[in-house]
Length: 304
Length: 246
Image 1 (tube, helix red, strand yellow):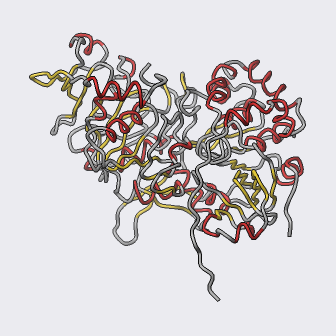
Image 2: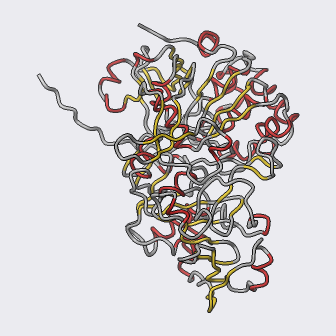
Image 3: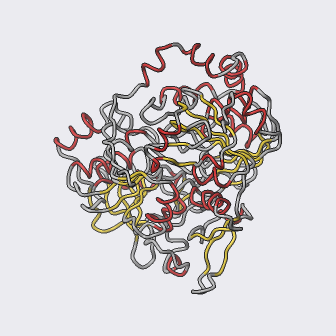
């Protein structure tokens, strides 16, 4: 059964006001096109969950979509601060945003517990630090076998996961290469899953290399084909990270006016990602295109 | 700093690499005295061989040519919690005399911070689980306070055997490297001790940028400078655009 939708339809149908949203991707495969569509649709009171909120959540927080952030590391990687999020946290602008913070390991354990159908996950961490004093979800549990005390975090089930990938078939069998982040875990942890891909491929392409499938179609609700939908983050083998944009964002985002002007020009005044790419022109794709470096094929064998 | 940090890596170490200077240091070590070093990036890469300097911690150059790419959960569960990491590199906004780190907030009130910092990221678990850690940060008095505004990552806790009494699996900080000098930790009190000073820096200059009465090793050493070949490698091959070296 095909699950193909436009980005507009997928966000309308699967992201509701007040939802816990996990638009994941660790540096790689960040679903910016989906973030922009949530901004265009003026979603409200979202609880935004990501290991690293990155520019995608900085933009969504600046647009006033979020009531809360759940995160592990909140910065502009390799550059500095996320200024819009800092304005929201430090000054309550454009609206106050509650924060709930973990370390990367702690937050991914919350997602992994949910994906595994467990109420919590134990981990070795946090003793002697101040983190548990500001987050009541960081607790301890005693091992029933050794008696030792371990940290424990509760399962986190997002309402919707949005993940970007290189390719999927129309049923949502999704293949990824390069950094895998916590996309698989977050897809299994979430009630709804929207997959955004560079290319839709035939099922037989997926079947020719099943080891590369990260997310099975059975847990996917919508598949959106959106080339360059992860820009200014990147897609391994397709386009490079737009580091210039990440650096430029530091300046743009230092004032609310700067962010608003950006959002007007690049989000509100454009209908979709296609329009965004047309506005950028062909030079963008050319600048970010890597040289080819294909893997050697493996032989799965045919067993009759 | 990059050269001094590279010296902390032994051939064959499995190193959990952060971005920025640690990345430069580890790649320098790999290209000089420690060809057998294995680079693990928390993004889920083992045996990375980046051919350009990665700007972000998830740069695509870490993947191409690596020995393994895995879900991030596996780097934390199997490599770090499984006890397979020899050295972890850390940075911080503040460090105290026992090597505890703050990367969360500046100010007394967590809910109304003067400055909201990035938070723990992978640092809390690296400091808790890696066999040893090396900390790199620029040295300023405000960054070396008597008391941290927030303790994000554990060093030697309150000193003495207090880290051991918390049953930390990892060994804790081994070195702190700044733009002024190199520090170790006293094996008994676990207090930071200035071991080496960079050429051209005076002891008074170092003391002025530390917020507690600083202990100094006697005799105080001087940091070795990189030779011409190493400098050429750093400036022409590893960081040709001067992104980290300026």
